[in-house]
Amino acid sequence: LEEQCFRTQRLESLGTLAGGIAHDLNNILTPILAASQLLQLKFPQDTERYYQLMAIIENNAKRGADLVKQVLSFARGFKGERTIILIKHLISEMLLIAKQTFPKSIEFAIAIPDNLLAVSGDVTQLHQVLMNLVVNARDAMPDGGKIEIFAENRLIDEAYAQMNLDAQAGHYIELTVADNGMGMPPEILDRIFEPFFTTKDIGIGTGLGLSTVLGIIKSHGGFINVSSKVGKGTKFKLFLPAVEGCPAIKTENLAVPLGEGE
Ligand code: ADP
Image (cartoon, rainbow, N blue to C red):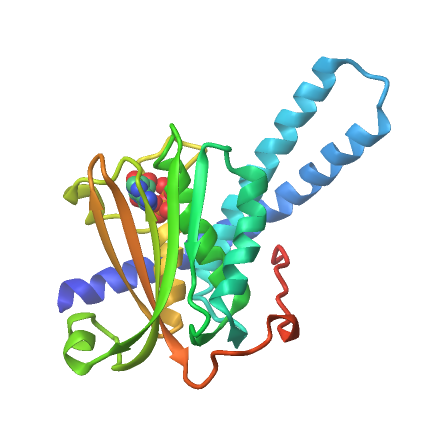
């Protein structure tokens, strides 16, 4: 218990520190991004090299800004704004982005039943959860592969709830995100939710993706199960408390502000 307490304290101060850094860095990056975009507009007559350089500045600034966003949302402790959310809706927003930015060799297979219950949550945060999971799945399949997403209503009983710390018995949505990528050995699987743990190259991985996912899911009263096999793939199962009696809300009536945050 003592060790756990120490760990929590350390993570808290890490969060405070990260929050400070993230805030400053964001102030630095925002004008870089704006200036580089402006320069590209104002000098249309310049050489190809000029554009290459500008693109490097912009890409790196964007990367920095993404990092800052992740650190900020991690440090903030996931306070969010609750609305009724349909998983179907989250998935179509994710697909919209993935279809534009993922390589064509990444295939999606989605199966969401019509009677799936809704969840109550922060739409921006849950969108981020889904994006982080599919980005990881993409990264685990450099030669292409399939991302399967399916969901079902699940009644979690006391016994099952007790196996998953902090969980309450009741109605849940079980959302599965599976890939047939490289998978993970147990010693990596054990560490994936640690903040800043990454096996990716510097500048590509921040190691904050899954700790953010876990923080968000926990703050929504949910929990996560992961299984993985080297060479076979990885399966994330997210359990989110369902809003009972809320299966058939019209998607058109839901405001889904998928703004970029800051
Ligand atoms: P990052 O993606 O920045 O490395 P994450 O916290 O999202 O940070 O992930 C931590 C690590 O977990 C990754 O570096 C990778 O080693 C491993 N990982 C996460 N998702 C998968 C996956 N779907 N397949 C294989 N490995 C994964």
